[in-house]
Length: 258
Image (tube, rainbow, N blue to C red; front, side, top):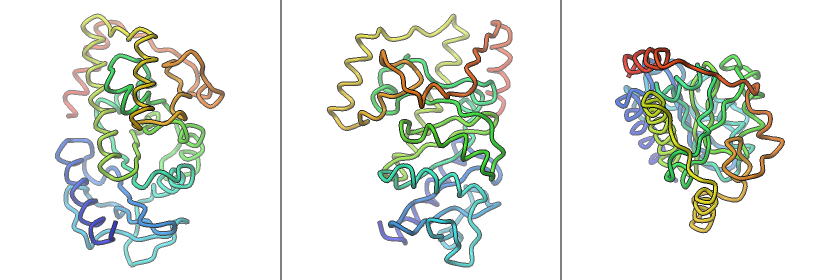
C-alpha cells in the first residue's frame, strides 16, 4: 500500500472507532506496516475522530521517528505484534466498552457460543495486567500473539490485528459484538456452548477457507480437545462468578459508557 493511501485509511478507521464509541478523547492507536522497516502510526495525545493525514507519525521497526510527529506511547505493542507475526500488516488498539468490560472483570472471551466467531476470529484470551506504555504490557501479551488475532488486556482494553487495517478493525468489531451478546445471554440465563463435533467442523471449514491457520488451533478456550503450553499461561486461572443482580449492574454500567 502506498503511504498516501495508508494515511487516508488510518484517518478513516480512526474516525469510525470514535463514532462507534470504541475510543474516546485521545484513547487508542492504529498503525500500518508499510514495508519491512517502516510503520505509519497515529500520533500521541490525539483524538482518533479528529485526525488528518498529515498528523500521522512515521517510524522504523524500532520505533525511531522518521518525521516530526510523535507516535503513540503504545507503539511498542504494535512493534511486538509485527515482529512476532510477519503476516500482520496492521494493528488496532481501542477500549470498546463491552469487550473492555470483560477485561476489567478479569474474563476472557473464550466460550464457543457463535459459529461466525469461531470461523473468523477464534477465542480472545485475557492477558495479565501490565502498565500501559511499558515493557510490562508487552511481556504480558507476548506469549499469546502467535496463536491469537485479538487480545484483551486486563484493566486496559483490546487489541486486534490482521493482514490489513480493515481486517484488524473487523476483528475488533467482532470481539466487541461477541462480548455484548455474551453479556446479554448471561443475563437471560446463560449462553449455550456449541457441541464439540460442531466446533470441529467449523475449525475444519475455517482452515480450508483460509480464515485462520492451524496455529489458531492452540487456544485457551478449549475449542479443540488439546490446549498448548502457551494458552495455559492465560491470566491467572481464576474463575469469576456473578449473581444476576451483579450482572445487571455490570450491563447497566457498560451501556452508560456506550
